[in-house]
Image (cartoon, rainbow, N blue to C red; front, side, top):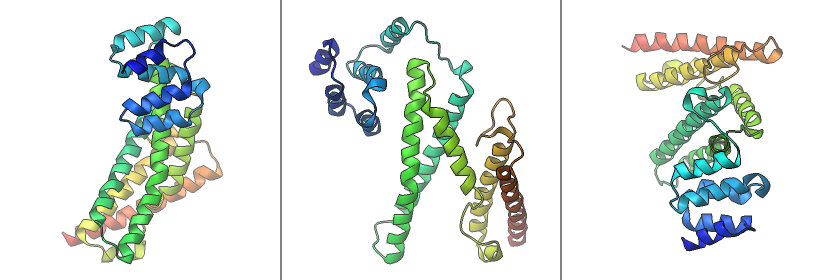
Length: 251
């Protein structure tokens, strides 16, 4: 990796050349895509940091350099800002949902029937925005751990994610309530789990304005949006009661 060391020692480090070196040696395609599309003004130092890691420079040295250049940056897991904790939770949630879709695609197999092709297309279209959101939030979160500064784009992305999730939580799947009795015991258990997760997210949204619990409550203020979410919550709770009754009947 002498070419990386040469680039690092160059006073006028060209961003495009650095990205080319990262693409040559780094295996993380998501990270490479980020730097290729990112603004050099805000990402040059991060790119330099990633290339230094590839050369085998100990992390303790890298963090020492960061501390010298940026004075003192203290980032500990016990004193993380609330927004970074929320970002970590959302990244985990998105990773889980993407993994579930990967499994569903695998279970569909490689058949080319009209029904399978349609379902595969729907899954791929549903998965794509989740991958994009995962990449954006993950990289901004990691940027904080490198610099100790919360990227200004992160709160906007998290709010957008919570808003989009709240709009879709009311329908965990497409089974109408009137057809619940047609579901098998296994299908009822799956639907019960999906609705329970949706209820928990909506309750967190109302109490914390987040998809997960935070250390301090932050209730959503009275508004048409809150009324709409509370209506969804009541509907889901009623549906959960019906499902639990049907599960008991099938025992």
